[in-house]
Image (cartoon, rainbow, N blue to C red; front, side, top):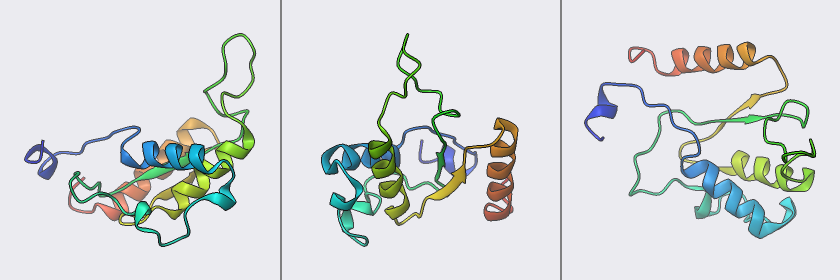
Length: 124
């Protein structure tokens, strides 16, 4: 894998950032209980391949795809989502890029591609 990522783009969902933000939000309960900004917990582990770009897409309930079956209700509470988004925003090394997901899918994808082209010039 290490040799492939030097010459090809790799797109992943729910890598370290997603799992860590979810776990921190679950443990904290409310975002005021998250570890303080600058805490080493927000730094990417040195034993994993570090991504060149990391996005998180924040969307309101109407745009979110994860709903509980048969109820139409969000799978997570507003407070939990706020804690998760806050944890994402505190991630460092590499910093997360926040994307507004309250738009059409094509607009979200277009913004992500534009950012990738700007930041990965010469690679894509």
